[in-house]
Image 1 (cartoon, rainbow, N blue to C red):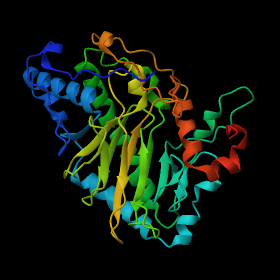
Image 2: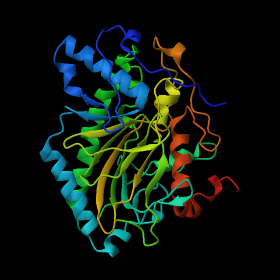
Image 3: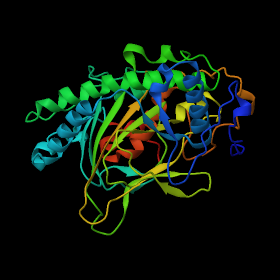
Image 4: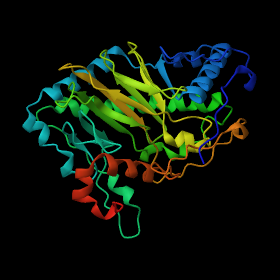
Length: 357
């Protein structure tokens, strides 16, 4: 049975008296994380805004995050340089060679809901030794392993790993404020992160409209983990499904990250916080779009305990989608998605994990 309709959050639901964010279809709520450092009144307003954005929309724009323009420019320069490399250099990092789903995916090789995504990308995670699961161990341990880096661009490794470290800190702080905003212990999920968290970074290029006219840059989907922080350029194309069931554009906001909640927060709060469908429409013609999503994910073996918070009785239940089951153990969620999204990797390395059609 599908989850019940959620009641919008209003200040009367909270221990503070400030107005909640009123979501607009022309712009996502804008959250200033630096307000947490400006005294009790500013932090209370931040919590009211966060509560509303996370409960009612599941998406917002984040400013005041502390990431400098110089840090952002360093990552974007390395990203553009990677996609300017000769195709042979990029294909040397083909993710089909990695049982850990790391490396380069050429345009059209990734799938969402069975349809090809018209983008190419480099998938990067925490730099750790490969772990092949032993007999009886979960298959998701294949997701741990080394990255593939271009020898001709050593600065990419430096910039990408620095970005993972910096955004992990931003996401940890944001998660603390988000949990506090709904009356939960801010550090409740700290134990499932720590030194063995499983962050994920994508460097993505959308090369324009496909030759057959299809405009699926990436199809409608939800993210697996806790939080996603997206750096996007000024081209646009990201769309979010809102309360009316339609997909609405997310205009780029300079200096902001687009933040969305992942499936684990929906599981943790029994649907009180919402993981929202989103997609990217390809830019027209030969226009290129670049984006860098960062996924703040816990340990692969983390089991997500129900969150204790005062609004739990108002939770409508998690989304019931037989085609997209949600698991409390994080690794199963990511493995499910990776096997679907990267069929060439799955067929070469993980045929034993595929469900017969």
